[in-house]
Image (cartoon, rainbow, N blue to C red):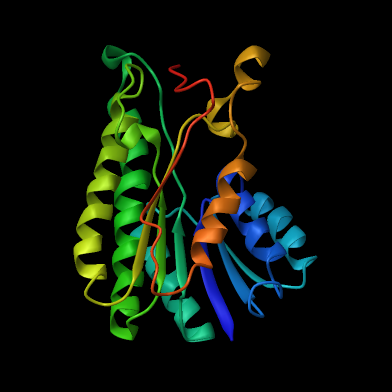
Length: 243
């Protein structure tokens, strides 16, 4: 049976690592046969990830769209259902952030962060969950952040958006428990991804890497349907990194 897996923010970082780990699992877990639906704003990033996934023999569809645009995500979800008939798993990984002292954050910083992390995440989840609820099966992951529970001085808008995502996770669980849909909140601490930009080597050396996160996400998906991994927390051994 085909497993239709939608991953947002799949071009780089944690999303890319999750896509590759799902592709590598093909044929190994109970004849797992995934079709990966990869979403990102940058077509060249998606093409590179898709090529690596296809090398493992899996089918990949790519959609270079901005999830903040509801009309684009609606068309993507509709196209996926029309072509494949189902969505088994949604990985809400796309996320952005602007990190500055409170009095330096601008309206553009606010709109940029909230439109992706909250608006985009909410509307694609709403549409996919509706179909999962009717079918009474499915799994939705949210890659939120430690910043969904822990605040940092230079992360006011980012933490606000991640606290909001956690609110959606907890609310969605109230519905999901009634229709056999699994909900997993993935909360990484400092993971070295392009979002961090240029950082000192000393800082990079103590941070996690995307592959540290992705394996546990894929393993959580393969748990028996009767079992839900509700929350996964990752931190560097040295603790939170506040930058």
